[in-house]
Image (tube, rainbow, N blue to C red; front, side, top):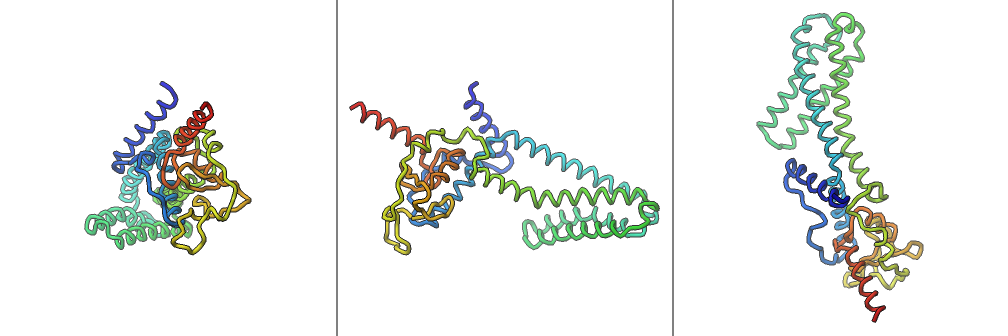
Length: 300
């Protein structure tokens, strides 16, 4: 099986796996073409939408990444269940032993919080206020546990089983909260910067010759619409990828679909996609057809 076939098979399998979890996932490269956007704000919005679609395409193509994430999630669930059940065991066996901090009461409340949150969810569904209350109660209990452990002086000796488990549970909950807050933000930043600076190798990207084959135009203010002129049908004077105004200091590319981008911005984009960042026209195919026409004209 050739490399493109393996890549297509991997992406298809990834899409099916993700579809089982979140529902039908559309292929961003197969979405209908968009019409010409009338303003820079519209162009920027479409670019952001297509960038998210490209990021989704990268994720779909990374079956290994999906597998690692699934394995990590399953491992976290198993550890959570084991610690939760062990917590009840520790509480029943060592609750009556001496401890200079109320770790026994803290452990009891900690074990009851998931039941309380589940009850809230069943009674109020997706009510935002209940979700905030659930999160705040869990975080408050965690902070209380950290404080009790830091202030404890003798519990490690008088009730070592309770103390050691409480310390383990607090560590696990702290790591879980840190990952829950940090990992999504880090993942989004990595994907965004990866798309912008070409960190990812993707079979869905255009060939290296595509960017050089797209027409380079010299900067001319007359090519672009004037600021504040609503009836000006010329393209907007800003690159929707980097939000910078076009000028003579950076090379400008004009796509066959008549959209303008900085050469560097369009080059980064074409490493992960073959379509126009604004209208999703297939740039690789358009460039290929244009080269064929030039070849026919030259032979004639």
